[in-house]
Length: 309
Image (cartoon, rainbow, N blue to C red):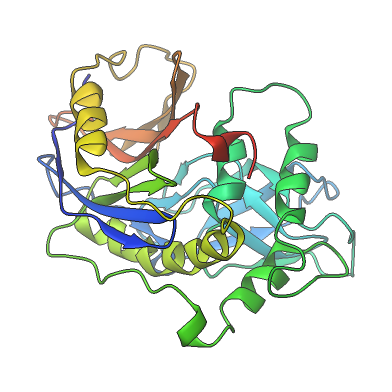
């Protein structure tokens, strides 16, 4: 299986960030809901709360996509989803999470609000870091870097810090450009180097998350003021896109133990690394249709943001 051909548009520079629109030649029909358009309920485990797991139920009539780095707000503490997950209509399952509120545990509330907001790139990067061991501790450390930039949180809450970031007057914020017709994703360059490319299986899936990504990026830009405000050259992104589309990824179903059947739709997570890249996402297959990616992010593991800010 290959990554679909990627088409990279002109970049827009915002401080140290350069944002590039991305299109693909993949089919635009998946029948999956996501973001605020899905009907997912998030609660602590019925057997007792655990930092690293939450229970997710899909009360919608279509399969639903929950993204890595999505904020799951409330409960005993705020969490983020560790990796992409698809749940079929009526399906419930436990998903892996990481805490982004180090100083709180418990409040009598076992349910979570879900606005489909995303963690900033500087926090999400840890989900794809090649480092092993104590990933939770490194996520807390990444969240703590945002303390004091626009506000502080007594519980070290990423949610509090994101709320404060988005209350900053517009004149002090960086507004991402409006999404373009048919756009399927974006590439992000920071400090003159490509950090990551994120693509979605359809334009509608991308649109469901673009505003939330914009809000999270504002936090990154307020934090990364020490990095040079230089544009990332478009040729760097196009070179990466060419490299990706030339790769061969194991065919769908190569590991039968990771496939899930959601009733007419099967899903399989993607998580792999090579010397310079980390890949994370999820691909889907329907009967008599070629498998395709519902979501995929590719990270440059040598970028400074992957290890430090």
